[in-house]
Length: 599
View 1 (cartoon, rainbow, N blue to C red):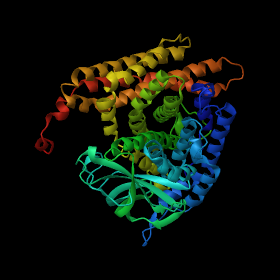
View 2 (cartoon, rainbow, N blue to C red):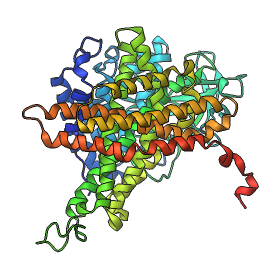
View 3 (cartoon, rainbow, N blue to C red):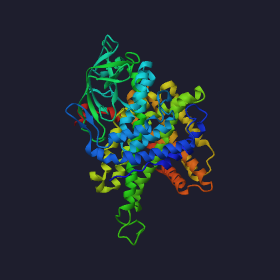
View 4 (cartoon, helix red, strand yellow):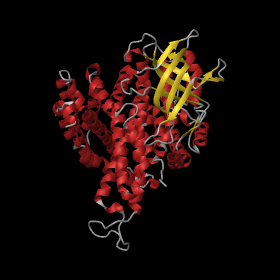
């Protein structure tokens, strides 16, 4: 059976030593985030997922969800009880606004729990995780009455939420949606249509589910400009706050999926369901992006989570499984064979995984800090800078993070050899669960186009220039330690390739949009490599400084420095080839006709 232990030591390193979260205590919302508190939250969150959530991962995958003849859906055995304990402990309220019953801690602490849940049991994590996007949208665009009616129960976790976007004939191109919302005399709307791929569309974990649904009103433009957003609860809410009758919403079926079997991915039928407009009519796209951006960061964390879980199991196997001898001679002559860990190719995969995981964890947490600073930094300039950075990096965290999360999961399966292909060992589940993260909440090719085709040009390229300024400043510091100096030099060179690729887009993209489309994916990956390098440079500096202190955790910090060096020697060289891929242009990508593709 697969194992999992929340990586609390590494999380404390990132939160306390790399981010220095306690140093922001003068800002609103950070006052309570003392080191004692954050350490306690991290350790208790780790204990909770280790003991309550992780043991349900394999069994939940094997059992899946069940749709009953009456249309109701039940989750795998143990999920309902685990969720009740999650609510009782208040884990979903960590970073939620205090005004609605949340604890008001920085988003960094919310991200800690999101990562641990995604690592321990991604299917389970999606139930509370999806509600975060719905809460964000209602908080930003909902009326005071809607906020008062729904948010306290959603923040507490007594009610959960979903996003109903996709339809059978349209996914990314939401302007094609056919779901209709007819205005009613009482101010509500009658919503009719079918939505598919609705994660957590129905289940037995809580007493009500608040669906956020995209639909078009009569006479609305037949494009994305005609989209409106509606609240349609599973059970209507009476004026006194108690639940009323069942809404005209039903589960047509549960999708049969490659992975995340423990999450009920539903076909949802709306048959004149009662709903209420969120924000302005035909302005649903803006509200949708509030949900999507929150969800995309969460999906990036899922990539990290599956990488961490698969890495832990591959490392354990590599230390226990004996096959062959070390290239330099028997490492353990008294045994008939050496552990897999002696083989350089096994170590290569493990080092790639450890380097990605450590860098990605820091990048996600730094991103969470930018979310907070975009609202709570002391000056408008600082708030704008943080908003620019997280807006730019959201598609990178989602796209690069899930690409590498999936690659890591398959590499870790590879370490298990043939046994990794046997379902009862659990390695295949990590691969299957990781695969969806590259697709949903905007496929990674869409993330790449969002970055290269939209984010780069916003405000005259202000966001990417801010990232370059951060990297240049970090590289320019006096880096005495040999490893730190090497990482700074290699990061500077990698960033130079990113700058060149950015300039190439600016020179060619305005005259030929296919030039941006053809190079966008390589550009997103390049930005991911460089962003990871920025994190590793910071972690290398912290680790080098820590090693000079008496009583330092020598093994931990030396491992950090070696991983930073691994990034410099094994990841940074990718930047040059990715830049040249961008600069290759669209000629070969766009050259064949449809008939020639089939020739």
